[in-house]
Image (cartoon, rainbow, N blue to C red; front, top):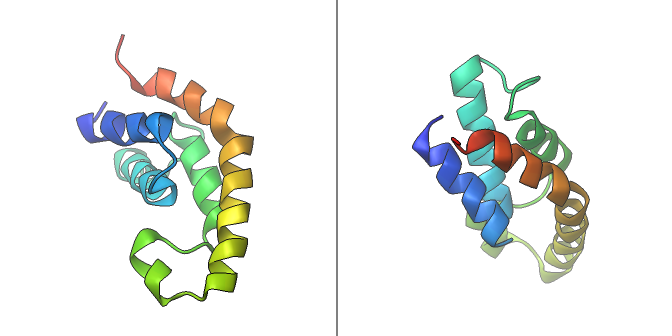
Length: 97
């Protein structure tokens, strides 16, 4: 397993900071490793990326209105809570025993 995948997955478990950025990094690693992440240990990150692709990443947040950010942050918080157990399970498959 690429060390960077373990690093980004660990960040997701430790903090919700830069959550989408870390999800996208994991999604890309899965796509690079397998050609596409579906039906692999990276599948959950593809699901989250697909569901949140309309939400602003860290580098574009400064260009968004406060109203939009409030709505986006609320939706992201709900998404994080919904997928928390699945991300934890994915972590267990990414970490070498």
